[in-house]
Image (cartoon, rainbow, N blue to C red; front, top):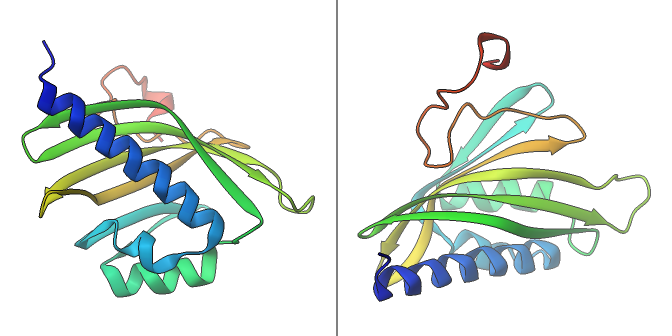
Length: 156
């Protein structure tokens, strides 16, 4: 049975993600950075290589150089959240619409690790993997453990 405390935590994590999308679409970098722990990591695919940025200053600089406020509008859905005290592991789908025909819509999913600090949930790790236009397998199950059901050909 899920406790009332866990239900509240789930809603707080959902709200964190919703605000993240709101701030990304508006280019509010300071509020996005404040959603991460001081040692927080964001990982993503750049070309054919996985990259990551860590810490508030690196996140701020990366956001300033990579997001397109008023052009890309991310939407979050299909959230799965597992809570263990002040820590959580979760995944959710992301679909991004764009208003610029030269930038196609894209979608993917996040594997997140979150930590409650000072009464607030924050991202300690946020790893983005694409669904579309090209499927990128994370190799992780919904709980963040290695995905055991992958065949050898899908473990790339």
